[in-house]
Length: 563
Image 1 (cartoon, rainbow, N blue to C red):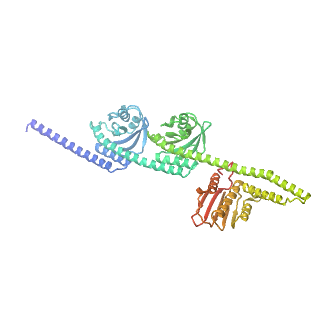
Image 2 (image 1 turned 90 degrees about the vertical axis):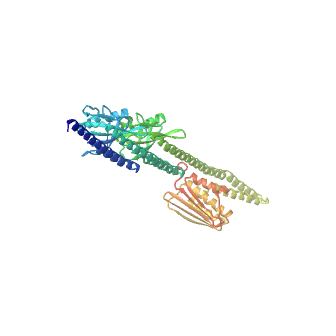
Image 3 (image 1 turned 90 degrees about the horizontal axis):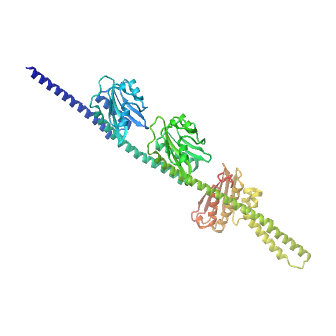
C-alpha cells in the first residue's frame, strides 16, 4: 500500500475517532444537562440544586475545581459552593476589584477567561493563587435580566481550558438561572403569604385593643420573622434629640436593650430617618458614625433599613431591620415591605393614644362629677340646711312665747324639708362612706331599700375613695332598678377585693331583659366603669333576672387613671 493510501486511511481513522469522542462528549453533556433539568423541574431545594449542578460541571469538564458564587453588595462576591477533592465547601465572601475573572464578569456581564492566573490581581487573585489555580473560565448567571452570580471552572495544570468551555458553562448557567428564577418566584409568593398573615395577626391585636409594649414587641418580632433578617427593632424619638429603644428582636449580641436611650447624631439609620422623616438605608455599617453607629460596628451589623412611624402626621419613631456583615444586603424592596408594618403600627399607636385620652377625659369627668356632688352637699349642709334649722328654732321660740299661735304645722313642714334635703345630700355624696367605709355604707343602703337586700362582703384590701363612691352609686342604682323596673323580690350583693382588683356582683330575681341602650342608668354606670379602667358585664335574659359583674382597679384615682 502506498504511503498516500496509508495516510488517507490514518486520517479517516483519526476523524472517526474524533467524531466518536465528540459524540460521546455530547451524549455525556446531554445526560448531565438532563439530570440538572430534572432537578429543576422537580423543585429541588436551592442549595441541593447548586451543589448538584457544580458537581455535574466538574465531572463533565474534567476540571480540578468548579464553583458557584453570588454577587452581593456593590463590590463583594460570596462563594456558595466549591466542588473539588479535599476542598471545603464552606461559604465565604471576598471583595471584588483588580483583574480577575469574577470582577471581569461583574463588569461586563459576559463570560471571561484567564489562561495564566499568575498575572491576575486583586484579593480574589491572591486567594486563587493560594489554591494553585492556573487557568480559569467564568460564566455569568443572569436571573430575570439581572446579574445574580458566576459559575467558574479551574485547572491547576499548565494546559489552558478548552476553547468551548464558556459555551459549555453557559448551558448549565441557563438551567441554573431558570431554577433560581423559579425558586425566587415561589419565595416571593411564600413571602407575600407570610407577610399577609403577619399583618393580619397584628391587625387582630389592634382591633382587640392590644396596645403599648405588647403591640410594639409583637410588631418587631413579626418583622424579623417575615423579613428573614437577623434583627428588627422599634424605637421612639424623644424631644431632646435622643432615641429610646422600645424593643429589640434578634439573637445577635447588640450592646443595647429595651428601654435604653441613646443620642442621635452621625451617620446611622436612626439619625437619617429622624432628620429626613423618610426611609433610609445603609448597606455597610462599617462606615457608620455616632454613638449608635459605633455600637452597631462593635456588633458587626451589616446592611440596615429604617422606616419612619408617622402617627397623625407626626414623626413618632421608626422600625429598623437588618442583617450581620457576613450576609447579603437587604433586598431592594425592604423599605416598601417595612412601610406596610409601620402603617399598621401607626394605626395601633394612634388608637391607643386616643383611647388613653378618652380614658383620661372620662376620669376627669368622673372626678369633676364627684367633686361637684361634694360641693353641692357642703353648700346645702352649710347653707340651706343650717338656715332651715335656724328657722325651726326661731318658730319654736316664738310659739313658746305665744302659745296661742298655731305654728306646729310650720315646724313640721320645715322638719320635712330638712329631711328631704338630707336625703338629697346623701344621694349626692353619702356621708356614711367617710364615716364607716363602703361596707357600712352598703349596709345602710340595704336597710333603707324597699326590698330585701342580702350582702356578702369580703374585703382583704381597702379600695380608694373614688372606687368606694363608684361602688356605692352602682349598687344604689341597681337596687333602685330592681325595685322599680324589674319587679324583683330580692337583691344579692357580693363584694370582694384582692390582688389589687375590686369585684362587685349584683343579682336580682326580677323579670330580666335589661338593656343599657334603653335607659340612661345602666349606660351611665358603664361609662363610669370604663372611665375608671374597669370592666362591666351584664346578663339579663328575659324572665331570668339580671346579673351584673363589675371589676375595678382597687387603687384607682383621677390623678392615676391607669392604676
